[in-house]
Length: 407
Ligand SMILES: [Zn+2]
Image 1 (cartoon, rainbow, N blue to C red):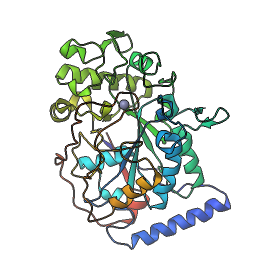
Image 2 (cartoon, helix red, strand yellow):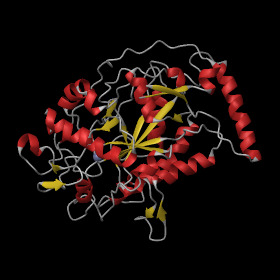
Image 3 (cartoon, rainbow, N blue to C red):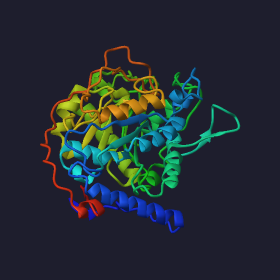
Image 4 (cartoon, rainbow, N blue to C red):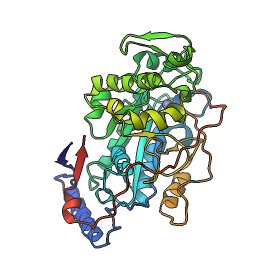
């Protein structure tokens, strides 16, 4: 483990506007310094953190209106970033939030109101602009462009705001069939799910690449397929039960061998493309394999090197969330389908009378899969194995030059 200074510095535009904004931001920091241990830069141990999940391919799902906020992730993200900013939140890097939940990052290195942003499945729409399905004459902005434009609009904000995670599928063969309208009946047209942008993204400090399994156990995989890049057969679940077609049932991964093939082999491929080991994992379809959560992830860290795993469930992430099932809110019909819905989620997060668990819908609707017809396992809210450190007093050096712990 090494420690390096975090690039947590004020954006530095030489323009008059930039200088003014910088002064305002620094004034804001100074005011925060006098607001006590729970001021602007200290995430309390009892904080509730909304972690948001978008599917940038949602516009390409068949039989939906691609122009609606609830069906267009690009449009929604642009609106939501403004809402998040207006409500006084900062989009923090998701790995930092995971470290805070795991008990290895102190809340004093995070703002007191943070949101995490994640994208699932890794279609090229995360990184590249595309022809809009809403209008022939317009372009759908990539999630990258939305994030970059927001950053440019508010240069006074910190360098790492906003910063998102894209969970990608490792197997090129799996991505090929999942993106094919011929095999994936949920799609309105063919889409590209390539790995051509992973390396650039991982060095962008705006989107970071992490692990969404080898093959997603996606039902578009109709028969056994040899993947020469990963040197294994998909769907990987077949190694356990000899059913070699994707079942849309990631919870059927219930053995050491299947877990290793779904997590480690995918991570190795991502590493070969990005040069960085993906230390975060997101369960496909939000289906939490009990074996993965309770046996493989806690006991085989020496081989998978996974810090945390994300599920879904219409709940806030807290320091008591299970490290291997950190809940997320899903954009669309599932958890929020309007700017007002998101505002409610953000306001509830700072309401001391609101429970981290909500009574809302805990089902999941993955862009690339059928709606599950079985009960979705709820996210565990067990206690993290690592004890949460006590809050520490704010120190100006920790705010201006906090440190980033890296493996
Ligand atoms: Zn997915």
